[in-house]
Image (cartoon, rainbow over all chains, first blue to last red; front, side, top):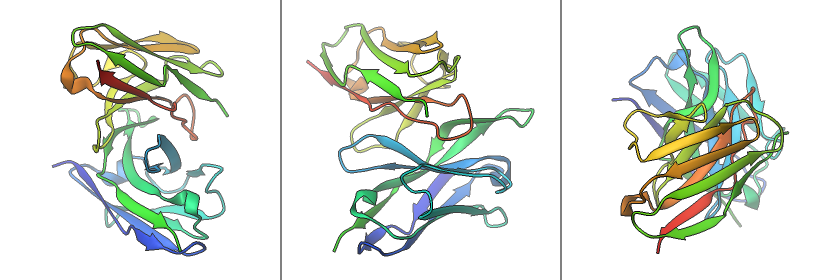
Length: 124
Length: 108
């Protein structure tokens, strides 16, 4: 079955750190760019970060640049998001999502598969 | 960065109604636009990509149109199971790939 399963969320104090993981199965993980998208309670979707299939290219929203680091381990079919210097406004459900790749290898930066999400709460 | 603006922010319609949601990009994005549906308490689901291509398994009452800066998502005959928040997303270039702010659709 094609699926994504996030883990690692929880309660953390402001200024603290967390590492999220996303385990992929049912597809050739290394062939696809992957992304993190978050949703604050009662709010809309916010793209956070993305990484190419090889891991050689990474992208960040301005709101997390310098604090979050995206990475992947293709041997483990796992995507990561290291979150440092966390703020109250980082409180959200964090989804990992799979980007699209056509037969020529071109990446399309929308999402056809989403995980169920993991909740990160930043509070003292 | 390109901004995506949806209208309306919320919408109430009756079962069987034709419903239209609009998404406007602050700069031209050709047809690099996707629409997602997020039902209450659920994960977002891809409905449409390339502005008008229906994702596999999506009911044919959903359709998309537009190019450049102006796009629409149309539900031809609203069903109770269509209650959800709908988001547009541009993907004309490498990230950031901004979402619209969402349109909450309810049944009247």
